[in-house]
Amino acid sequence: MRIVVCVKHVPDIQSDRTLGADGRVVRDGGDGTLNELDENAVEAALELAATDKGSEVVALTVGPPDAEDAARRALQMGADAAVHVLDDAVAGSDVFATATVLAAAIRRVGAAGPVDLVVTGMAALDGLTSMLPVALAAELDLPALTLAAEVAVDGGAVRVRRELDSASEVLSAPLPALVSVTDQANEPRYPNFKGILAARKKRVEVLTLADLGVDPATVGTAGARTQVVGAAARPVRENRVLVTDDGTAGLKLAAYLVERKLV
Amino acid sequence: MSAPLSGPVLVLLDHHDDAVRPSVLELLTAARSFGAPVHGVWFGDGLEGALDALAGAGVEQVHRVGGLGDAAHLAAPAGDAVAEVATLARASALLVTSTFENKELATRVGVRTRAGVVVDADDVALEDGRVVAEKTVFAGTWTTRCVVTTPLAVVALKAGSIQAEPAPAPSTPQVVDVHVTPSGQGRVATLVERTERPASVRPELSEAQVVVAGGRGTNGDFSAVEELADVLGGAVGATRVATDEGWIGHDAQIGQTGVTVAPRLYIGAGISGAVHHRGGMQASGTIVAVNSDPESPIFEIADFGIVGDLFTVLPQAAAELRRLQG
Image (cartoon, rainbow over all chains, first blue to last red; front, side):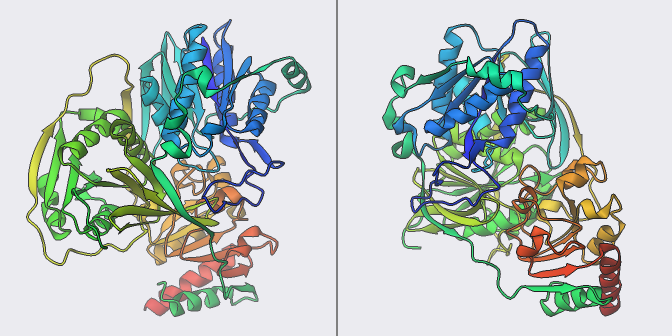
C-alpha cells in the first residue's frame, strides 16, 4: 500500500500567535512546529502501513522553507520519504489553491506507483477550518472519509467510524480514498533515537510549482477567493473580578448573574 | 447597504424531522439583512410541517432536494446538490450553520462553483454589495474580517452568533422540488451505518445560550455541573480530559478539536483553561470560572473568577438561584 500523508508547519499554539496587517499568519520562525493534529495523521498512516508488508508512507508538505521541519518530523516518526513543495508563489493561498497544489504533488508521487490512500489531520491548529480534506478529495476525485476516530483498511476498502455533532457514523469506500483522522484516532508516537538517526539519511525532495505543472497565477494571493480586510487582537476583558471563596462565593456568583441579567 | 446583491440568498435549512434547528432562524435573520430574496434548501421529508416557521422568517422559496436518501448525510453528494441549487437559483450567497458536516458541504460547494468560502464566522453582513464575514482565530484571541470576492459567497456561521428575529411580514414560501441522482460510480464513500444520538433534555451544546462545563477538577462527578446547568436552562460541556477519561460523552467536548461554543454565559468548573479548551469557548459573552487553583490560566480570561471548591460553590449558587426564581 502506498500512503501519502499531508503535514503542515504551524506556529506553536502555546506561543503568542499574531496576524499581520494583510491578515496572514506572522511566521517569524523559531517557534513553529508540526501541526499537532497532523501527528495523528502520520501515526494513522504508519499504523496502516504496518498492516501491509512492503507499504510506503510519503509525507507531503507545502509551505515556506520552515515547512521542511514538519516533513522532517514525519520522517523521524517513521515515514519513508518526504516531499516539500516550496515556491514563493504559494504564499497566501486559500484552501482551494492549497488543495490544487497538494493534488498536483500527490499525482506526481502517484506517477512512481499508484497512491492507495491519502491521510490528513482533521484541521490545522492555525486556521482550524477543516476544509482542506474535502477540497483535496474533490481535486483528486477521491471519496472522502473525514473526521475518522477509527480507521481500518481491509480487502481493498477503507472503513472509518466518526463521531459528529448529532450522530455516530460508519463510512466505507474502495481504495484509493482520502481519510482525515481526529485526535481520537490514536496516540502519536514520539520519534525515538533510531528514528531520528534514520531520518537524517532520508532526503526531503523539494519541488516547485513548475515541477508540478501548476500555473502560479491560480494560487497564492492572486488566486484567493476571499480577502482579509482587517485583523485585530480581541480586546482584553475589562472589569474582571476574582474572589476567593469565603463560604459565600456561590451566593456572590448568583448575585452576579442576576445583576448582569444572565439568568 | 448601498448596492444590493444580484441574486437570492440561499440558506441551508438544517432540521430534525419537521422542526428547523434554532440556528437556521439566525441564518434567515442574517439573510434578510442582505435585502435580497431569501431562499432555502431542504433535504428529505418533513417540509410541510416547517412551512409556517419558514414563512415567519420570510423565506420566499424552498428548494426541496429529494432522491439522495442516506447520501444526503455525506458532504460530497449533498454539497453537489446544494451547488446545483445555488447555480439554478442564481444565488449570490449561501449561508449554513457552521457544524463539521456543513463546513464540509460548504467546501464541496466551493469546489463545484468556485465560490469563496468562509467557515466558523461569528458575523456576516453586506457591505457595498459584497459579503463580509467576521471570525475569531487563534483560540479566540484575534478577530479577522474577510471579504468574499467571488459572485457566490458561502459563509458558515456559528450557531448563537446573532439573535434570531421574525420577519417584519410573513412570506408565502413556494416549494420547488429538485431531484438529484447521486453519481453511481464506485469512487464515493458509502454510509454503512448512522446512529443519531438521542436528543438530550438539555439544549444542544453548540446552540445553547448558557453552557456549564466541567474538567479535571470534577474528578468524574458531573452532578454539580449538571445541577447548575439545569437551573440555568443550559447545556453541559466538558474538557478533553473529562471526555478522554470517559466521564462524559465525546460530543460534550468543547475545544479546538471538539465543539466551539459562544454562549451568552459560560461557566467553567474545575477547568484549568488549556489553550485547546480556550479555543472552543473564548468568544463566549460572559465567562465565569471556578477552580481551586488560583494559578489556573482560565482566570486570565474570566469575567468572574472564583478560587474555591466547585462542589461547594456550584450547589450554593444553584440553590440561591432557585430561591431567587421562587
